[in-house]
Image (cartoon, rainbow, N blue to C red; front, top):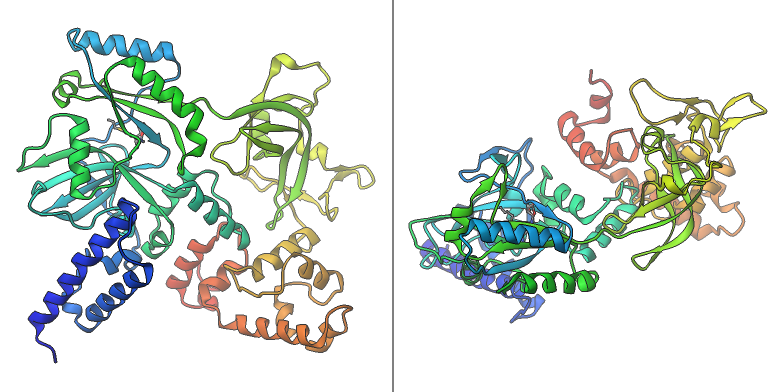
Length: 553
Ligand code: IVH
């Protein structure tokens, strides 16, 4: 057995090396070694920690893959409340804010720092003796949730900072976000396995850091920019915001390279206008800029009104909106039988993307916004996925517009009642729910989507059963529900035109293989209302078997 002191020494050396390369790669975006070499170091450390678990610590670079799941998040008190920001939307409003601020500052010439206002979520990171001790959400500003384990998985958050230069205890604040590319990738993956899409990068980031299982967070390509030093104890820190950011950068924190120190409000306006033009080219979504008074002494004197500092303001970018005609409201039938209204639009280009359809959530929402067929409507791309209808332009009405009633829309004259547009089944609206449902469990639209969902990648992962195969199996009467998949025989499949012996055998084999999927996947695959992938994990862990779950009260 090796000398324990040597092992400890080697572990410490590997960690220092890995922390350094991690910093070069994720914070500076300028790696010094190849990915393969990095992986080799990581494996070497992982092996040592596995062999000598007494030396494993939560701030080891190996722990970025995510610790064990928790039942619920703990609560963290913020010693210094996390505040929000006041907004301005125009040059006039910015100028008015500036005038007020100068007056309060006693008429002095002011310096500012302008930064991007990234659309993610605020976190507070506390370091004690150079190590990341706690990471918390903003919560209500006074108390947040303890998401330390999840934040440890974000590569651009240092797990340890150089002890000599850092205050013994301090807190930094920043914005955790999902870059556009990572957001698109995540949604593509979710779509492939039939999961609900995130509406925008902010929701995706918030959903990712609030996972009870840090291993899920670890798979999301989250990033962070630090935008503020909360407090520091035991060491003097710089007396301007600009220098504080440079100092935090030197400690290893990721600071946005687009931050600028500006000497006048004219320069602030130019910075803003420049980014209104160029923001589409940024790798992340920003909804405006934040303007901060540079002098921390002056910040202290200006103080707060309510929950907003007087020394900073958010100057919002104009939203990406467009107007077009709502030709008709269509209805699609979802996997659980929901009748989903959607807007069929006169195609319109909004921020460079042609939009033909937009989400309309449910009848109540359509009525509340008073959206009518034939209306000129305002369309907005929130984030960049499914655009939504913000509301009608009432002044453009001709009087020909038609108010929306879902039951009228799906009214079947022959049957003399509202009917599912796909199968003619009866429509129900369960007490207390906003959605209408097709009550026919055998509705082909539902059956097909259930089958597709069951076989999808995040569920039972049966390659070869996609949209067209599901439709074929149902049409030919080979299966009526997912259970029938498991009694399919090769001969039945091979009889089908175009389907040869070989592909039939392959399909039977993949179906057979799917029996090995873990319980959580099966529960998810069943497509129970309100049971997504994460809830399925929780249920599998709690009940252990399908019988256990079925007999729960
Ligand atoms: S400073 C007291 N700087 O915007 C001032 N906030 O509405 C605290 N945000 O919850 C905020 N980018 O999460 C600041 N460069 C930036 C920011 C930023 C995004 C978020 C922050 C906060 C919200 C305020």
